Length: 125
Ligand code: HEC
Image (cartoon, rainbow, N blue to C red; front, side):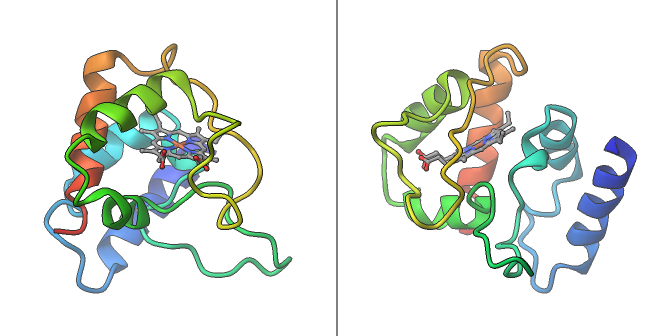
């Protein structure tokens, strides 16, 4: 499964039309894949699902666009990665599944969380 996901991620990466340098950063994509982020997230917005359901989690390209002018985004999103999303204050209501993002603190270190957030915030310059 992990191999399949890595292969899919690699395919997405090489086939992405007009991919930005950040999206071509294989080391960061590998870290995100190894830490399980890509089980729920995608880089590019996913095609509509055949069953009509929304994607599980926001595409990171969309996250990058949403927060690119928010100077506090590095800190708030790093906290969200470590602590999980706030069920009472969701930011993607109606756009993604009603599932919450579980805390990732046991999966990523604080430093990794910060590096992942730094990376995904510059996906779309
Ligand atoms: C089990 C599924 C799942 C996994 C695994 C997951 N996420 Fe998420 N993530 C979500 C969902 C669902 C949301 C939308 C939460 C909301 O509506 O506020 C989200 C939102 C986010 C956001 C935007 C938060 C906001 O407030 O807008 C960031 C950044 C993020 N995830 C990063 C990560 C990183 C980095 C990892 C891996 C370490 C990861 N996620 C793993 C499900 C997941």
